[in-house]
Length: 266
Image 1 (cartoon, helix red, strand yellow):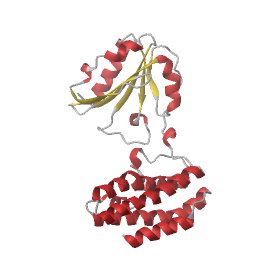
Image 2 (cartoon, one colour):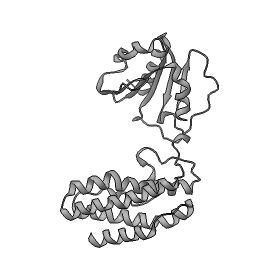
Image 3 (cartoon, one colour):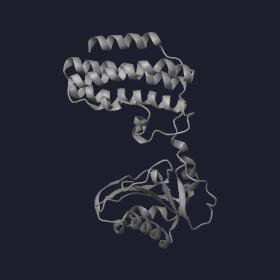
C-alpha cells in the first residue's frame, strides 16, 4: 500500500476502536525542517484508557501490512512494535495509557495529537524541533568531551602501532569521531545562537564542515592513521576559538602534549 493509504489506515483504526481515545504522532514527519520523502517512518502512539491498557499487549497489527521484520519493545508504561513491511512502509507503533499524554507532550516538541476523542487536547502548538536543538555545553561537559577525545585517541594509536585494525577502528568510530562531532556541533550551535539541530547521527554536519568523509575511510592501518591525524588537526584548530566563544576553558598544555605525541608516533 502507499504511504498515504497506511496513514489513513492508522487513523481509521484509531477512530473505529472505542478503546483508543487519542492518536499521537512524533518524529520526523512532524519536523518542519525535514524534507519529506518515501523513507520516513510513521511514529504513532495509540493512547487507550488506563483500564484497557493491560489488554493491548495482544493488539492486532496484521492489517497494517505484510511484515518483513519487527522488533517488540515492551517498555515501562507502553507497548512498542517497530514494523518494517514488505511494501516499503515502516510503522513504529506504541500503546500508552491516556494518563501519560501530558508527559508525552512535554517530552518532545515534535510530539502532537492527531485525534482526540476526549476533547482535552485543544489548541496544541505547532510542532518544532526545539527539543533537539544543540545545547550550550557546561564546563563539565566540555572538559569531558575534550579529555575523552584525546584519551581515546591514544587507544586508536595503540591499535595502529600493534597492527590491530579492528581495535583501532572500533575506538575511532565509536568514540573519537563522536567526540569530535560534539565539538563541531557546539561550533554550529554557537554560530547559530543555539537555534537548530544537526539531526540524528549528526547528519547535517556536512552542511557546515567540508572533508568529513575522510573520517570514514578506515579500510587499512594507513587510512585509519590518516583519519586520526585529520581528526586531531580538526580538533586542535577548532578548540581555541570554540573555547573562547563559549567562554569555557580546556587544558591547552595537555592537548598540545597529547597531539604532538600521537602525531609523532603515526
